[in-house]
Amino acid sequence: MPLDLSAFIQASFKHPKPANVTYTYGTAGFRLRGELLDSVIFRMGVLAVLRSKKMDGRTIGIMLTASHNPEPDNGVKLVDPRGEMLDTQWEPYATELANAADETALTRAMQKIIEEKHIDVGKPAHVVFGRDTRPTGPALIQALTECLEALGGGTTKVTFQDYGILTTPQLHYIVRCINTQGAYGQPTVEGYYEKLGAAYKKLVQGHRRLSPLVVDCANGVGAPKLRELARHIGEDHLLVRLVNADTETPGQLNHQCGADFVKTQQNFPAHIEGHPKERYAALDGDADRLVYFYMDEKDRTFKLLDGDKISGLAAMFIKDLTRNAGLENITVGVVQTAYANGSSTNYLKDVLQVPVTCAQTGVKHLHHEAEKYDIGVYFEANGHGTVLFNHPATQALAETRARSPAQAEALDQLKALSELINQTVGDAFSDILLVEVILTHRQWSLSQWDHAYTDLPNRLVKVVVGDRAAFRTTNADTQLVEPAGLQEKINELVAKYRAGRSFVRPSGTEDVVRVYAEAGNRHECDQLAFKVAGMVFDLAGGKGERPTEFL
Image 1 (cartoon, rainbow, N blue to C red):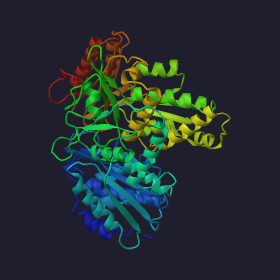
Image 2 (image 1 turned 135 degrees about the vertical axis):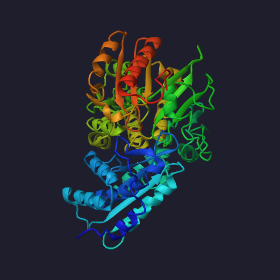
Image 3 (image 1 turned 180 degrees about the horizontal axis):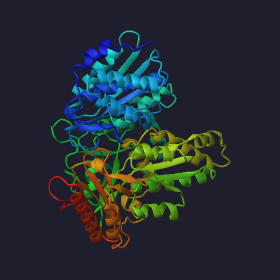
Image 4 (image 1 turned 30 degrees about the horizontal axis):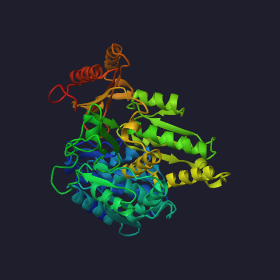
């Protein structure tokens, strides 16, 4: 049965591809200035429909967000049936559809997908979608809706549902719930709150409540949605105070606030002066990243607890629980990227004695590596991550019979943790609850958590270059292949610094190159980062001013 494209082709004339723009489906989908994405969003409706038909009618998700990027940007990514990122084999199809110059090329690209993937276009398709709070979102959702409506005519059997404003992890959760017929949870935002809230209250029951958590919401979707979650859980169990929660004033999203700002600036965000008695956390614009931070009581300096610290905390707690539950045969492992602080890796291996895998940058790469462990903990240093309970772990939790009250308690807590953690993707809300559970059980302050190990001084610098595609990496993004000769110069420079480490990679979400550096003290770390950034700028024809401060 051929795919009826007459209405779709007619609709596509309203959404032409801009001239002189080349699109690439990167680590987080497409991401550009919002006004350049109309045709891309329209065409991603096509890809979602074809993907759903290929997957025998299972639901595919589409999320419109640009996460931590500035407010004028927007983006789109597809979500596979299990709530995971789009299968990497389909990413080239996304790029090809987005770059089709006209309707003839677009039709040809669609037919290529159908033939190469042996898609029965007579199968039904179901698509769900949501967006964050960006002002370009409504118009882009309209373009997507027009595509799906055009494809839904005739015999193509396309249905869709708009879930409105969501955090990115909430959409991932909903997709998985739909495709498991509710086994993972109820496919609504309310169902999400109920699942996480019930598990959290069970885990903190009987423990003294911590002091309030001040949460920087990046002036994004995390503000209204975290307020809803906290209201659902109740102040008797979770007390949060939201700052940077303005989703109405233009230009405020991610502006001098949010998880990315706190991580890269290593400083307090706007509207938080810092007080040694308070506990702080920060989300990014779509609420899939989380970092904690605080002011040191002794020297009144800023202290960051990033994704590496969260990994260590989670691995410690989960390993203790598996031991107490009598599940010594369950492997607990951690997946990191090259951005992980060297001290965190040493802590995991030498102190906690858990295996550590280094994966290529990008959550989709960490997620697949984490699936190789029975319980896999993965967090990027930027605070994006989660914990996966794979089949051997869930089977052991279901089948193990407790022989003592202590073992029964540990088994119950592990089961509740598996419900508390959003295993589809990194989720700042779920991760906040995870951290709060562990700190509540230990009755730890942020300082006590921080002192499990001491980070090596590190710095992340963004360098704006003429063409980020000129930078190619290998070995999990730690070694440059191109531009030729630059890696050798970096190696020579790093060798001059005690505990020195530095690498360069093109961003998957912004038109920049990222430079990471570590060294034995803060002065040498900053010096190393500055010098490497300067080399990148000079060699690659950087734009704007040569890096003179750390962005």
